[in-house]
Image 1 (cartoon, helix red, strand yellow):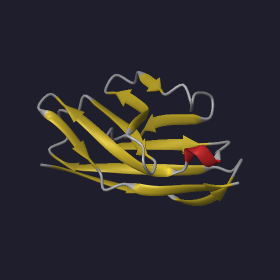
Image 2 (image 1 turned 180 degrees about the vertical axis):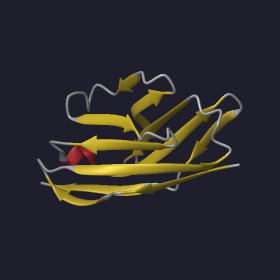
Image 3 (image 1 turned 45 degrees about the vertical axis):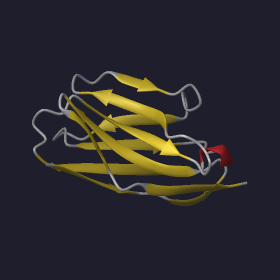
Length: 115
């Protein structure tokens, strides 16, 4: 069993920054990758950024150059630094941990960007 706990969401003005954190606990020794996804009202959940156990990163085109995903030294924590935020970044952001056997999700954290 794996638990993911997110923090760091909130309300920010356009152009501002937020940093999301996600800590994984439980049976985490076989995590292949961790990442962030988001879901805006009325839209499907979409990939924001992922980072593999080897450190390779992948970003959605809409956030490239503005968001940075990174991992903590213990490899069970993942961060999302979000700069130059736009109103269209408003969504619930979910942490994801990918295993061979399947995925685990956090409960989500709300990010709201006002114009």
